Length: 340
Image 1 (spheres, one colour):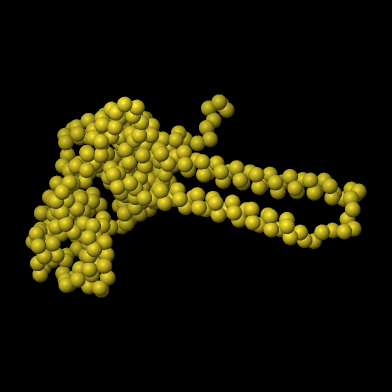
Image 2 (cartoon, one colour):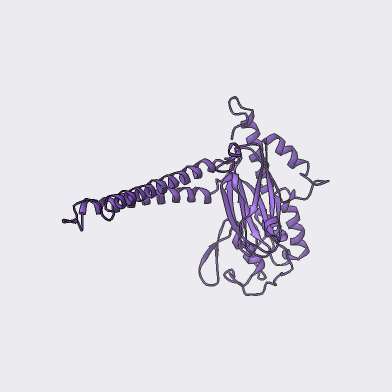
């Protein structure tokens, strides 16, 4: 039995060894300080036990050097651990600009995952080896948490708010993920598997429609259908009109509000403008846009993807494909095969 005992899951991402090293350092310091306190307690208990022959006539009530030592050294070690942890926290939260985008919706009790080209998965996530992957996540009902032990990452998935996490897988294989935030009756069954594939195999899987019988629409194409069905273009045309501002090339720009404030038109802003159009009204306009409570989180993600593509240039699905193709080229280069 002991031969099969493992301290931790496999290290299957670039962040896993870094986080394990930090945890090992914290564990080592904890053991050292605990052992020091325990040894001192044991020695003093034996030496100064009742009836022992020791000099108790001149007890020392203070020792400045000792007090400074046991205060300053732990302080320095604590600050070092804090700085180390803060640096890793920042790395975990800042996805590289060339990360492949994948969208995750948490529901009671399943994970719904959608790739930019429209391929969907339930309780499964296929990703290429050695490629940065950014998950943009939201909950449809209650708070969930997307946790992949082998990648040493987890992030709360919150209703009405986008959160994200990213990773670079370093091992081929299947790695389980869980919901690590209690979310109701079947919380323990809200699990799935991340399948890490060679970039070329992943490209073939993605181009063939994944686990579906036919190739689905890209998120941008599906978003355009929702956009046209809801007649969004009657107010939001190629140029600004009295009915509404243009959405062309809006993504990533600073938007001036009626309050005089400026906000960045990112994913969160676009979602809020769709679900709660009166929260941040563009300067020069009134609260005349209708609300669409019937839209699902899938449709909102698709609308956001379409609005982002209205600026022209490369779409997210095309960007993801280019990222994977670059990984395939790197894998074929001498000395890089199979490496991230």
